[in-house]
Structure formats: structure tokens, C-alpha cells
Amino acid sequence: MSLCKENTIIGFIGIGVMGKSMTANLMKAGYQVIVYNRTKAKAQELIERGAIWKDTVAEVAREADVIITMVGYPKDVEEVYLGENGIIQNAKSGAYLVDMTTSRPKLAKKIYEVAKAKGLYALDAPVSGGDVGAREARLSIMVGGDRK
Image (cartoon, rainbow, N blue to C red; front, side, top):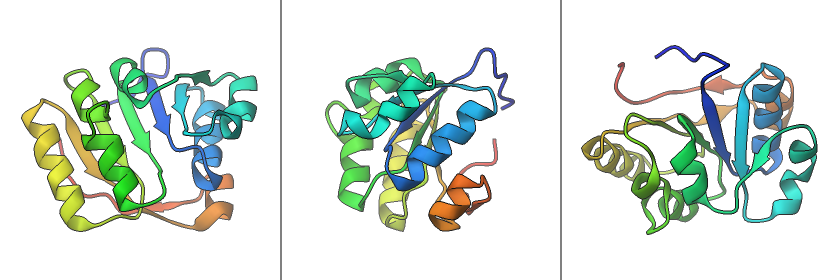
């Protein structure tokens, strides 16, 4: 997949210490980014800089071509992806789902299998580099999933 900045909408869910900087760097690179976080105030600075706020995970999933998540804990990952109003139930066919949360391998495999059955591409992509690496766009990303 090649990402054309003009036509690719990136959804980012989880605007905490890491997610805020990662989203800012995507915007700096010229991508249109839509965002969701449980606490809207944490996304306010990004919204003021051009990110588009969505009120639910489902709204992000319905509109984005690529959905990146950076949430707190495995239970949050499970809810965001597999919940009734989650990403997998609402994403458009062919969307790429990229979970960058440090989570459990069994959960990543479950998300992959459920996503694949729905025509979605799921990648498990935890990062190393911390908040400084996120701010400086210098994270190391360990990606697992299909090569396609």
C-alpha cells in the first residue's frame, strides 16, 4: 500500500503523551488526521492545529483508511478494536489497523483474525523510544502482520 497524502485519511485513537506527538508528526508530514480520545481536552491542541475531532471510535473507523491506536492497556485495546462500537465493527473494507500499544500477543492475534475475516488488515506495531522519540519522530517500531 502506498499512502497518497491527498487521498489518505488517517485516524488516530489515543491522544496521550505518545499519541499526541505521533499525531502531530503525521500532520506535519502533510496527512489529514482525524482523532478520538476519551478526554477531548487532551486533543484540543491538535484540533487547533487542524486535526479533525470525532466523538466516537466508530466515527473514526468509518472514515479513516488507516487507523492507528495508542491506548493505555490491553483491556483498552480489546474494547477499542473488538467492542460493539469498536474499530472492527465499523471500519470500511480494506482499511489498515495499526495497534501501537504495548499489549498481549494473544490479543494481537485475535484482533488480526477477526479483522482479516472482515476484509481488514491488522498490524501489531508496538514502539520503543518513549515520549522523546515520539516528539522527535524517532521511534523504533516492531511490526507484526501480513506483508501485503
